[in-house]
Image (tube, rainbow, N blue to C red; front, side, top):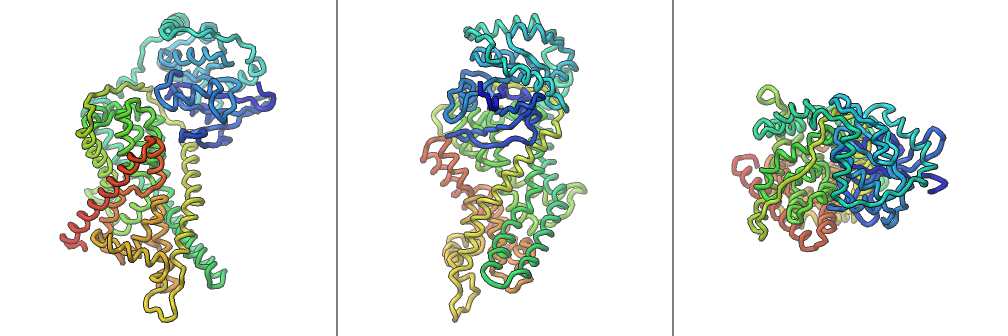
Length: 618
């Protein structure tokens, strides 16, 4: 074992509370990256024991077995064995098991034990087990497993204190633990039955409150209605709760621009800072509150145990569309970002269902679209209450999200009609106990996602904004110019050329320019428009005013609606297309996704614009 910093690997089934325990052990001392050569998320943090000894703690992907049926499980197996390239072997394993579901989780603990690595079992959620009347004889369980067993409550303050103390006391001796001899797979089930009989008294397999909630939440009618209401309220909250924070951020950047402009002499540097960086970055950063509110709801639904039930509830409907209930969670993840959503399809074992999910995931309305939608809705949809209680802008946002979902179902149904394999594959998944999401875990998750968003703002969005500023600023207008200087720039010339193609959609040359850097990240389209209109403004006052009134005065309602519909379908994200190529290992599938998404975007936007003009909105 390493003499400097011991490496501990947390392993366990999904829904075991492993990540919550990791958050408690490491706090803010953690970093998120990807494993070498793959796009699976890698979390590592630092922990200090009572002795002062420091530990590196690795949160491995959740796995049901070390006989892998997915890439996540294969990575967990190889890391536990010390065979993963570029990763040092762990000095000890901490196997996290759910005390309320030992029948399932102990089988995996026995598999991990057979690796012969130094190991501790963290008996998590013991408080929930006691409330259900489950009695666990920890010394008997420890004797049966042949490894140390420590009770933990990952969601309670100091709920992992005993585990930290036990690790600190045992790590120097763990290497001397006896290696367990492998046993046949069927013997694992027999061992679990024996252990449960000798060490656990379980009055019922499921909690009464779980059964009571499931009678309603899994009901074929009331369950679907509840899910629809939950999703509807989420999008209402995205608008209602974020407005004060967005106003504050917008006011801060409106103040910052003139201050910087006044402090610098007129010239390229002042234009770059005020019209390029401040206008562009501020145009995107203002939507951070809405994105975090959406993330907060998704994290809360995941932590509560509701998401697997939603997958079960939607399985029959999704099967009719050529998907499976397992597709629900990757597609829901795509509401945050299509890239991790596509990556999470590795949990779908059937290759046919996995490919269908990958191809329709870009139709889910990711958080990068939210700034675009918020800009257009704010410009063209009045902020008023309808039916006495609903925010009209929130209703439109819900409609855009719903349009993406329905389009995904139609697309997957179409693919189902043309595929050769017509067989159906039943859904099998674990329904975890309901639990109240812990504020710490929600805050950690929101912090991680805020940092990812801010890094995008500080990285790719900043770089693309500066590049766009350059293309919009150079070359300058000739001496005998009759048009604004921006029309003579590289970007202006390209925009006017593209406008011929997009004129039937109602897009002007400014929109066409914004679509190009928007391929790097969808939200860049907003910062690009802010930069374009700042540079093309007739005076300084117009250059620093908010973008929303500029486009509401300069565009027609038909153009605004057309652009909204364009962003429902268009694959305006190179990262998403690259992930499709990487996950399918096929240029053909990536090309198919690109062509059908752009084709659907052009056709839908064309119909929307022409219909809106015919109805008098042009």
